[in-house]
Length: 368
Image (cartoon, rainbow, N blue to C red; front, side, top):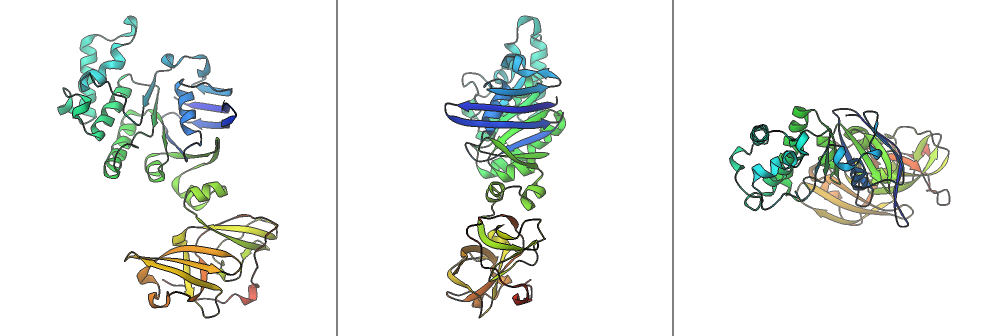
């Protein structure tokens, strides 16, 4: 089923939890709502499920106004982080629950329910667990049962709220691949909430990045990673080094920074800010360089350097230990920094960065 969300708002007390959400989800699409705690993603999921109601806006599913439907009339499959299995019921009974509690007129025959349960046990790869109880299952097995119970009712939309958050990393990776296979096999329209970037980008067709009750960006992994739309998205995606620069004719410039590989930006001349990831900053020894190494640590494979500039502040970077002249990376060594990849946003016009003149930027040899 296709979902159309328009101008959706929700407030709890004085807090705006959702601030004008506009989102479309295609039939059969798997979409991730990605963001930090408090960004509004779970509230949005609950509104789709009918567990919360918005203050304003529209929720239309296949041309039907779902805000006029109670939760039980939406035929939603909902999977929570903490399984919510019935501890006194066997796996078979948990899987059958959604079918057995239907109104008598819509309830399948017992034989049909039993056949559906056996089909799900095989599909979920837990045929040998049908007679066990939740307390006898591992976390990963419980989550499979929870998903199976949601699928048993053949939901119009499948919603998952941090479905793997309570599991350890190795199990999460296995279940992510398995869930993607389940999605492709069922063709269900699926929305899941997560704060885990790796999980979102591995599973979803599209990722919706949310922050402070708004949608900050929608796209695939490459687009969001390489072209964050806002400083919030850049920081959330790991661009934790922020340095002041000066824009001149569409180019970013700053004393001690080689920014020549960054593309031109249609920004006015004046202050701006470059956002980069620690691994995208390359140190280059230079006796006249204004950066000084103030901290150096190694984990064997990578060096973690903290450098200080008299005007630009501090920058922290990670670089492969064998890719640089490690014997030059010592305390108080002078450096220039090459930004191999980064994003530029307009900056604070009150605090421009000292810009180096174009003709004074040396053509440094690129390190491998």
